[in-house]
Image 1 (cartoon, helix red, strand yellow):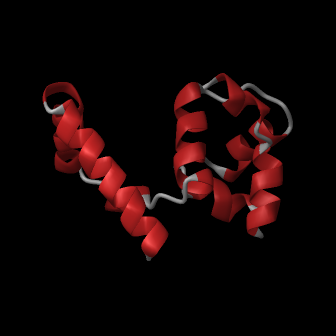
Image 2 (cartoon, helix red, strand yellow; image 1 turned 45 degrees about the vertical axis):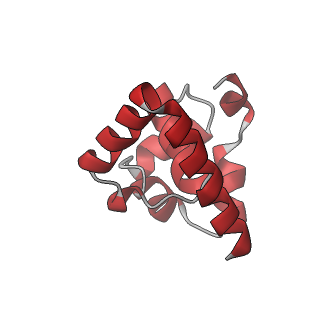
Length: 97
């Protein structure tokens, strides 16, 4: 995740055309907290991960359920070949769609 530190949250927010309230609230961060991160304060790793998922990967985290996460973790740990196959199929569908 080291390259995440190189990503400029302010630049991402501006490219998305969002104000600080809109941008940071999707991560559960207050506008004032987000402003501090944009001004150079160290961003905690969980916030960095959420920023990447929500604003770079464009994943709607409100639709992710705990059960879904548990299934993914199980597949990764116990059925890694099936997980890789499903991941490959999902990417192909996304490209085709």
